[in-house]
Length: 196
Image (tube, rainbow, N blue to C red; front, side, top):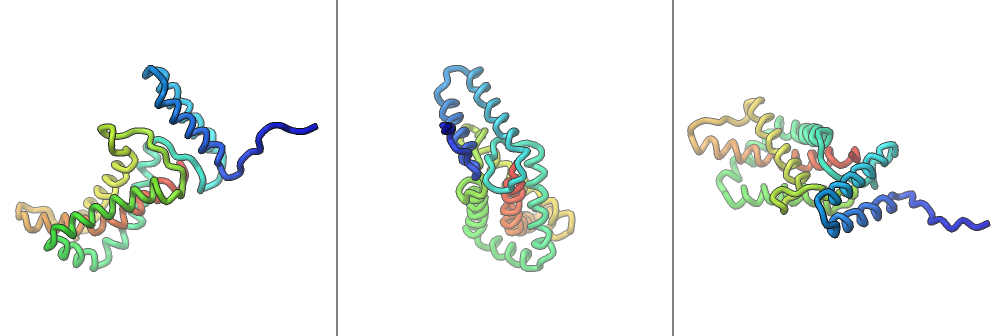
């Protein structure tokens, strides 16, 4: 007797295809109630893979407290070495003198986070929610978390100073931006590598 059932994919392609179909369905259903039913099916599919011990090849959808905690931990793991490295202060002073380098540093960090989350294919990261219908919430929260951790860590350890002098504030902001780059990478990896 032959088995006509399709073979199960060991690499998670079945779940990826399911998410592709659910996302297409979400785009074509008529009512908000139907869209919420599709989103609930996506949450159930995400939860169903939790018993799988694999680290890579999982579908990641949504962003919750656990993801936030993972992003904070990843920021700290990559950021603490930056906080104790004197080169961070030197690089911060350099980009403070070159505003285009400052903007380029921020843009490069956000681009790297975007690449880790959505392009590098460590995991199949899906966009569940967008801020203002444009910016993926995961991208915004991961980068904002990394920047906040950068400011908090460098301020708490006395490496930057916030005063009424705009020059000092600008230099502190620039130094935090330099530390933000590896922290953002750490936050992105910390968020997606556990596969939640």
